[in-house]
Length: 518
Image (cartoon, rainbow, N blue to C red; front, top):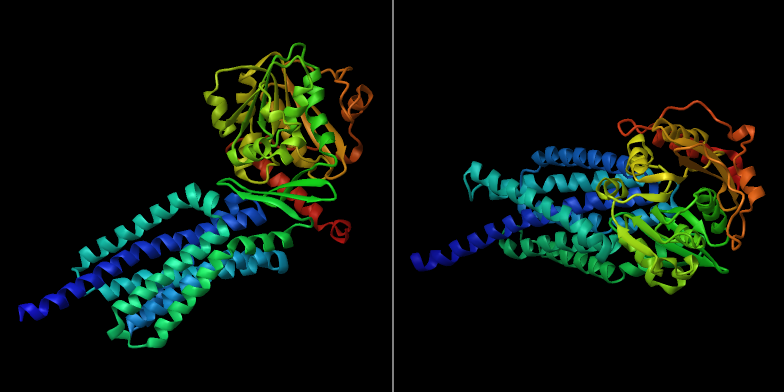
């Protein structure tokens, strides 16, 4: 009896261990699908805080619905578990291509997004209750719950570390969804084989292998799928696309015009970016008597640095940009480095990849001229860089006689947001001189010069400029009625009213009939 029972006992132990490994695997996959949906939504819709908050909430709610629905499955638990794993693998595995292509083709993208999140969440919510019921004869209840939940949380930890550190920058969003779909379906495959006597459904095994084959093909061709989806998202041919832990970077080119997009938002066109960057840099820089040290926060494309280098009085420039992928593109790729005249390769330039908000607290140096060239405050992560807290940190690094220049969104499109930035600078005790320039790609664009003394518009600029002259510079500080000052609140770190101002302005602009007709 001992000889015959030993193999059976060993086989039962193998099944139990395999199911426990499945807990870890499906927990990792489940969180990856959630992170993928949140990241894709933030890339395509902006405002990462809102997108992640709503998607996490809906996903967890859907998981709760799935857990509740598991009570209605009474028989053939192994078969139902295998079916669920196949469905989760397929639905989660194709989530990236479905969402990217839907955004390009379907007007009601949010319906598709949250429908997909709910479907995935319900299926994922069914998994753990099924496994607990399948394993309930193998362990006492308290041991079973502790083992399953421990492995579940461990899988979540693995996913949360893998996603930003390896999957997004190295594997990519499209391939990641297919890879983890494959893992889910592999759980179904090995469960089919381990429990073949229990389910006795060869067609179920065939389905699992069929789903596995489809997902493997998707993983192999994921780069092609990503390229195809991006061709639908952008008017011009995509010549480079990179995903970093912070953003999706896309460069397009047509008829010699290069455009940079971050998370789908246009940052510059090579046709007229010189207008934007000359207006950002030179009014403030030319007003400094002896600008030996300069600091650029953001501006990882190197265009602002290029403009500062035109002033021979500047001996040292420190560029602080959060994203190393961004600076690498505009340093290492000759085609894109040429756009900034290879400025980031200059021996006068020091590159730092860090969060400027934190870095300012750690840096002990002071500067004669500071450029703040962050993207618009479209979410709270960016909004913190336009608060009184941030501007006070800037002021602490400003030498006597120094000047700060801040890009400040469009005073025509988002009027409240622009004047909110002006008033926020003034609330820190600095003088704020608002001005604007016409950039054809963007329309009217706004800036603020901040200093400890009242600002005087300079009457001399470097000869190499293509747009700015002393006469033009003086005109930039005058505002017509439709861009004139409006009452606004100051943007504090604890309220970030600026993000709402910005959203309201740009949403209204997008709904304007003439804009839609264009």
